[in-house]
Image 1 (cartoon, rainbow, N blue to C red):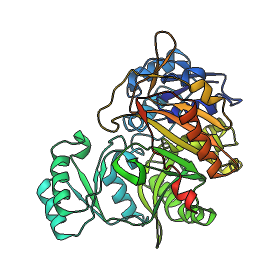
Image 2 (tube, rainbow, N blue to C red):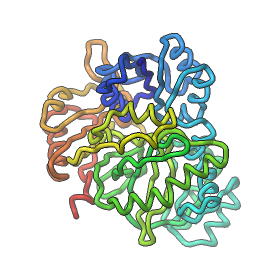
Image 3 (cartoon, rainbow, N blue to C red):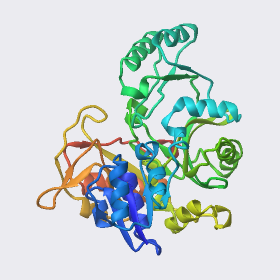
Length: 425
């Protein structure tokens, strides 16, 4: 089968790496891809949000199956357009993708179907939002309603800071995404990322990981798309998984079907593990990045089999996915200045050497090939240094050894405390 993967990040490199191992994938293409994905797939220079161009190229290449990695093309209706043109695709419809594309939609959905989440209010004007802040005590959780590349959440600790942030939100800090703002209660506990796959009526669990959203050590600095992840997460065991499936995932799949927008794809539940049990922070409608990288390293099942079963509505007939026992850690190497301004086009050396180290696999994110075959930076989050080990400690040591002893990129930086929660247990 000819398969087209849409996207260009570390998530897509991990998916391409795993899909290339599948018995069902005869030819693999990726649009727009990156320098690392080129090792596994033919690269097509079409942007991930060009839904018309992607549909046209899928038709011209006689693609049998399309897998959509990022959230933006899903929200823009790429799956709908592909299917209207007779091309099978894995991912939710634009209607179902609202679970990520609109936080207000999701919060209202959770209220309607009694899915545990934080209390909230939705605002479309600054005056009402400021009035709410004045009546309540900090900290506040402010969220842009729409897609903001993982950066649309701010948690001010004072009323003055909240006022300033709200003024920026409604002045276009996140463009159209913050024309509507959700203000939530602040929840305490450890965060976890849990993944399930759904065919519209049946959902089966994958596994959990723990992400590190803040830019700097000690969970300091601005929110990012994610600076690292690891799995398994000690905060999330079998008991927690069963609880989340019962109270969050299954009600979501049933509710979306009842509302006439059945969800087919990956449900990524960002969770807060509170003293009252797991609560939903937010939904994403695709694999997380950088969590996907550790999931693909641990997955012992043919990934394409899961995608085909989800698309075919037969998840109730497949065996539970197999997972490798060894922990996996992913440390993100980002360009200095990220998530603010950063430089592109700087050369990265030593990737091949790092890939030869025990347990190490590098997944590219913001990279491109130079004119002489060199690897150049081409984004904010640039490389994902994943490492497996018999223990979390060994996986962490291997990942940082690859960064310190093999990779040569002076313009990059990383957090030095990835998996710190696991190392404390």
